Amino acid sequence: MVHYAENRKAKFDYEILEKYEAGIELLGIEVKSIRSGRMSLEGTFVIVRGGEIFLINSNIPPFQVNNTEKDYDPLRNKKLLLTKKEIATLSGSEKNKSLTIIPISVYNKGRKIKVEIALVKGKKKYDKREMLKKRDTDREIRREYKER
Image 1 (cartoon, rainbow, N blue to C red):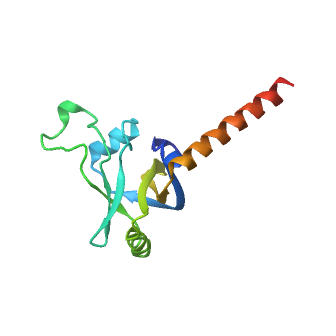
Image 2 (cartoon, helix red, strand yellow; image 1 turned 30 degrees about the horizontal axis):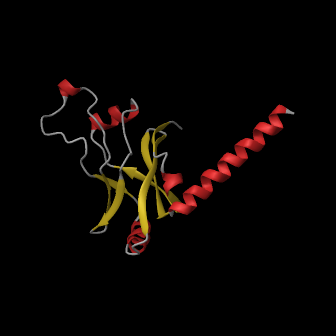
Image 3 (cartoon, rainbow, N blue to C red; image 1 turned 180 degrees about the horizontal axis):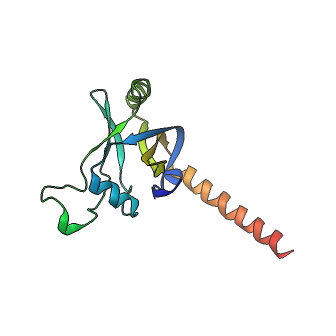
């Protein structure tokens, strides 16, 4: 399994409640671009509209700029492929204002490109500070053991 893109700030900014694996509807030039590692998940989120689920604001630049159609939009909304039951669960939980759906990573599974999305709750500033302090103390402890 090869990871093509990862949302590194997701674990820092959000508390992950549930994870889902979804397929993604792509154009051929987008698949080539993703496989060459040119996708960005920065500022990307997921919405549920009309019984369908979409990846919003994900940037996939064209693979070959000169061979790309004139009307190609690298930030276009991409439809995600989930079961009706999973979409119903996500749409029900999306109505809760404190919860959000974000992509965590894009990877391949066999020949298919998959997106791992998660239902998350935003962390407060003091939670983030506490996590940074814990990480620093763990690093100090590891250093001490390494020196011995």
